[in-house]
Structure formats: structure tokens, C-alpha cells
Image (cartoon, rainbow, N blue to C red; front, side, top):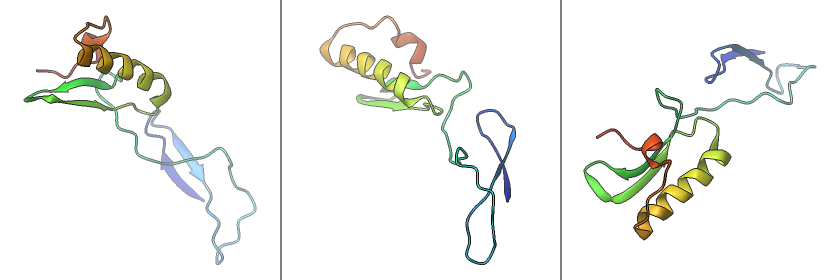
Length: 95
């Protein structure tokens, strides 16, 4: 068994890995590991990159990609079509 920290909560998570040399009788099927990019506010960054307005970036989902990808699509679409999006300021890069 291996102990690691859940990056979102900071709580320890115990995980077991199958290995031919180490017998393991108990595996957590709901355990996972991985790096999640996040920001100080917990919200992703969505919009034009500062210094290069021709590049749109969407990053820092922190594991909430399904929800924030929809919001990101709406913000980027509005920007590309010349419209404004009411939520764009919440997710904008700091200038």
C-alpha cells in the first residue's frame, strides 16, 4: 500500500498497486492519482493570453473540466465573435 495526498483536499489517500512480487488482497477501485492544475481562487483561467491577444488559453480546471469547459467554450466563442460574456471577468488572466 502506498500513501499519497489528495491534491484537492490535502488528505491522505491509501492506494494499493498490483505487483507480481508483492501480494495484495485489497485494492481500492475508486482511488486515483494525478496532478491537477489549479489557481489561488480555485477558478480556471480563461481568455486571451496577456502579451499575445491572438492566443486564447483555458487552464487550471483543478479536476472540474466538464463544468468549466462549457463556460470556457462560451467565453472564447463570445470573444471570437466580438460579443461580450457576463462571466468573462471572473476567469480572466491578471494583467
